[in-house]
Length: 320
Image (cartoon, rainbow, N blue to C red; front, side, top):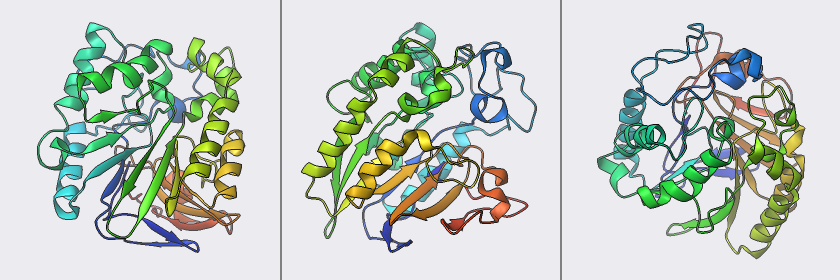
């Protein structure tokens, strides 16, 4: 996914550029397990096997589910956008490593080095902070994978930012000459009921524990927004609430906090670029940079009055 202009400004269901923010919402590579199969263990025979090169897929999926999209091309595309937009920060909405995350092993470290450290170099990549977020593919390895992304990776490369507490939820502020914004990051995997099924590839010690403690993140979000004096308040998470494919009410407790404080929701998971509006709240979907899919934006056909804009038609989908 890539959503990038100078920034995003959301006003009464529309959005226009605000100069100089230069925030890129970025998700790398391709969705496989959650979108091309039901996410069950029986459908994924080697869900944690991908630790190798990007140049060829390890999992032999149907071509429609695993397109030949080169991450190097994605990085080059983002670099070119940032050269024009003067990017100063990156905002991730999860699924950082396909298709089964990374962990603190030799293979995981080498993959992090190759797939991120070396991939996103030069130009705007060298100095900008990447404000990271977990997605469903990042939690497949369980606690070890989460610990790597939230605790180890920030020490390995200081551009990779996951707050200061080693938790998968944190808050940070960005500002410009005439605007201020607070971002609250949460791990929406902890709210997804389907992850708790014994057949789910996402069920592990981490998701079971954080699901039981998910109220902690709701409380964190409430305190973060209540304490913020910023003009804009953003919830940054992976899974969608409003969608052109399937709405997900599991994250409703988080959305209630956003609605209370007049915030904006930034998410991905669906592989296209879209804008939804419901209950005086804007939802920005940016999930298609690695693999835009028209179906996730319903081929550009609005499903209801909450759909403000879909970056797709019957032939193609926008990547952001």
